[in-house]
Amino acid sequence: MDPVSAITTSAVETPMFFGNGAYRLFGIEHQPVGAPTGAAWVFCHPFAEEKLWAQRVYVSFARMLAARGAWVLRFDAMGNGDSEGQFSTASVDTMLSDIDSAICRLEQSSGISRGIGLLGLRFGATLAALAAERSSKVGKLVLWEPVVDGGKYMQEMLRINLTTQSAVYKEIRHNREALVRMMREGATVNIDGYELAYPCYEQASAVNLKEGRKRFAGPSLIVQVGKDGQPLHSDLEALQETYPVADLQGIVEEPFWKEIKRWYWAAPNLFEITLAWMAAR
Image 1 (tube, rainbow, N blue to C red):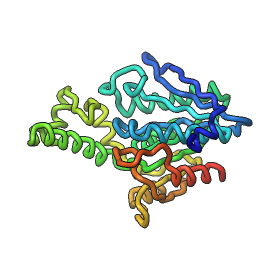
Image 2: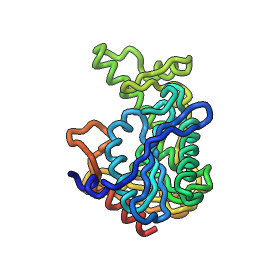
Image 3: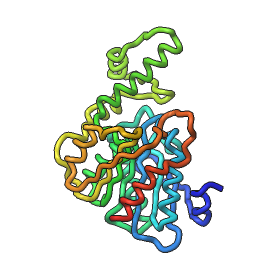
Image 4: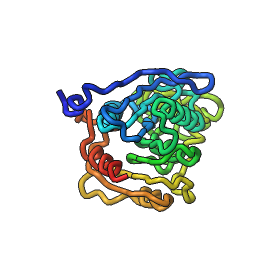
């Protein structure tokens, strides 16, 4: 039995559907083991294929938090996993609305109405940061390797399509400009099996977390995940400066949100620094 399973055998994990307007979202609620600490966390998952590869790490960390007395809600945004809707109809607006609904759901279950934490990885961290700007119920933020520049990130997504074209057709039939034009005209672009539509592309491309001072004044943890000796990225340093209270830490870990040789059920260095930060607050 792995260490996480060994300490969570008595945990209560409840699968559920909860509503957001005309559709239902699927989530799993982790109830605290032993005496509740008053902490509650909503996990905001990464975008598209990165969600798949990060899934096991999310499960393991949720169980670790529950074993330490916290409430945790993991959920699938609309069009993802077991939630209703189509991925192609999702946008930054719908994703933020889904996070708002998840916060309300966890508030009802836990009885905690203020100070709920948001934890996200990659674009999930970006969404967590945006959601904290609009919800007075959010009290803490944990941003793992956040995407700071949404425009650059969407270009990375289009590059995946170009790579697929090269592999399938041995040539690039539609360059990035053509792909954007196709989306603008109503088509979708396939990104590792996920159909990206223009509203999502446009809204995500407009995101730049470095711009402007943040209204969110609660404690924030920003974590850079990289190689040993890697300097802190200037984008993350700039992001830190936009928050009244923010810690920026760099840790050594494999990029488990990608398809890598090593299977990641947990990210020990990332978990350790995050748990220490949470305990201090």
